[in-house]
Length: 179
Image (cartoon, rainbow, N blue to C red; front, side):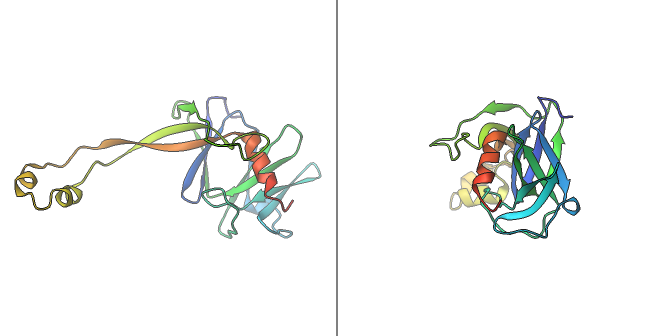
């Protein structure tokens, strides 16, 4: 069982997202799902206590797309007993002390009656600073500057990973239709 301070990291295409650890979710392998009766944005179905829950096929920007190369789906349980899921490329539980999430409210009106799909953000990672090639391009035609330039050290770079609001995500998935 995930703890409230843990997060589930999911990868969809080249994008990463987080689920709060206290979220009710299930991770299913493709072979445990029904892929026979699929249409529209639905990639598969999960049967739970006689109910079928859809798994939607999304791209990195969470837009419906057809994908054949997926292996897992994450299903979110809703309070009403309904739920929905989507296919993912990778899933990992982050250690309790790895993610420091802050609240985040996107601009504009919420896309679902349940609110915005994202409720938090996590800033992580570092990327290299300006390398020699970039320095030389920036100082082209200035030989005296080029002679004094040294490689810059690594500079911190904030990579933002958005955190889902599970209730709003279920509402968004259900709005895609096909179920």
